[in-house]
Image (cartoon, rainbow, N blue to C red):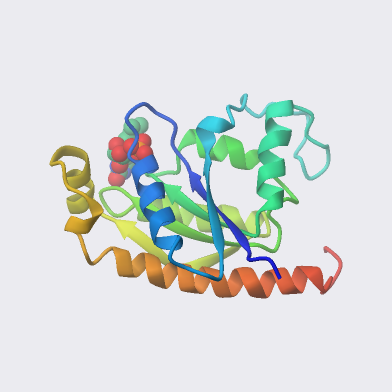
Length: 197
Ligand SMILES: Cc1cc2nc3c(=O)[nH]c(=O)nc-3n(C[C@H](O)[C@H](O)[C@H](O)COP(=O)(O)O)c2cc1C
């Protein structure tokens, strides 16, 4: 059986973003695992227009080619790690816009969260958990929070993740949980456990 494939989503696209470094660090730690495969999904590779369709993708198929490519990527994955910044106590606008183009593609798949910011991106992570439920994603409790001290160290003091050794074990724990959910939910989806409500 193939390994569940997990997308590590970089949720910011601005010049000089920290998100890319965080995502690559998570991907390196995930590479040690034999039970899942990961790939980085960079929103820069999916430059989407603002969502302006006449109705939600729940009712009207998305026609925009860029959005179909983005939704297709989300559909082919078995789970997600949202690497999220916090912009004005919220998720980034570019991530929310991208999420609004989705509906069925992530249903019944798990999502884990890696937040960074003054309070570890906690407010953005909490918002993402609520958004996930509306997309029928299973949001996980186990998360990674990179707070003010390591964030400033990484951004301004030339430090690396190795300088904050307490962070990596939180990624390992999160991946362990995510793997369980990815395997379990994939088995359920493949068994056709029940029709969509
Ligand atoms: C528009 C904007 C709003 C921000 N608002 C917050 C905030 O509400 N809380 C916070 O902890 N950090 C905030 N920050 C600081 C970010 O945590 C920091 O810039 C981080 O590097 C952003 O992620 P990125 O580098 O991947 O874009 C904000 C940054 C930007 C650019």
